[in-house]
Image 1 (spheres, helix red, strand yellow):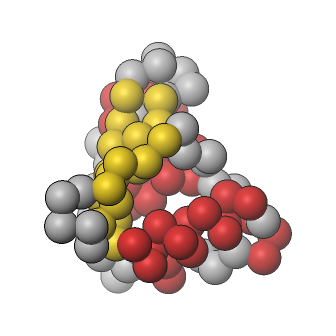
Image 2 (cartoon, rainbow, N blue to C red; image 1 turned 60 degrees about the vertical axis):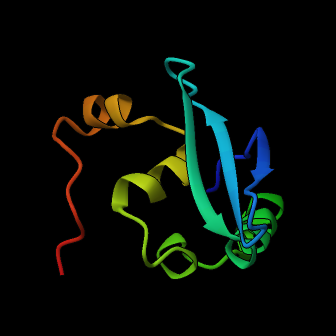
Length: 92
């Protein structure tokens, strides 16, 4: 499942895109910066989640918190409440 972004803003160098969404729980604004190719794949995933690649594969350099945000739209504080613990790095 991927959260639909509300709007995007290209950065001045045009190599990256900033995606903004609003937390469905507290309406706080969240943003994440990604490459144009990641954004194109993210757009495809939002439109057709059944055939999307895993979020870990699209965004391998993102933290678990950033990936959860892209899938659910939940902000940092709401993720901590929902998961009852601070978000940590991937355990490998």
